[in-house]
Image (cartoon, helix red, strand yellow):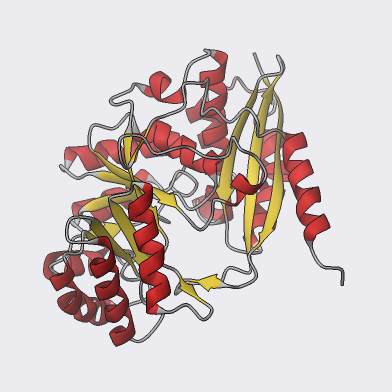
Length: 381
């Protein structure tokens, strides 16, 4: 069996700049779907997130650089494929667009391999559990959004069955963020988890100052407090803040995570299957975390395709803390009733009992159809 086709397709879902975090305003959510097809007609799929223009770069990297390297390969040879792709990185570096593309390809290959065996991905990887704890992610800044609006939003998440909520901080003056944190805790009650995410907005003194004032609200973790690459700074914050650090969703590779973990720069090892190198690399990173006695939590800020892959992977981990269930970026629900995974037994989600990640409805034709519908809904110039 050989890989016959590898290709990527992009969808730009308009968001109108109505919400934002400290790093970016969401004028659109740019999504890349990656497909791997065998010479027997079996199709693997994955979803990759990106920031604005980088989506086009990911598509070009897959279609023009990576596809020729892996066409004709045996899809079971994921490690060999990874090393071949890493070899095209300039001066031996592996980061940015290339790591996003590689991550997406790797995830699609795992979906494909599970489909070849007609088994759910989590069972192929070696299941530990058949359900995974999830938390509601939202609490972004919004146009004309008031404190009462924020309280209504997070109360709605609790009403849905979630017992944990994450909100953004770092995009307004500290006193305003502290008001948002206090209001969220009041709205969700004393027993729910409350996570705060600064999206790398602070330096070390600023992060420590915020944490000192916020810890009275029983914060479960302080996510991405400072610059991504500052592992030493994360260690300082983790040791002094009084709130456990959660890092780092945009970090890639087991070597980088090993440095962060060895410095004790985080208490929650935060992976994104679209950014860390894919499932193949995520397994190595999770093993490092387990060796240090640290839980793993998965970042998932896309539609159901990435979410399902994250649930499948997390169900294989004995030390899984949670998977993010982003409530802002579930845009695919508007186009397909299959594009959701329901909560069961409170905030838990079960992997789909279907081959791979269970996303057979996501085909190239389906993506083209959605892209056409989105284009038809846009106002004329």
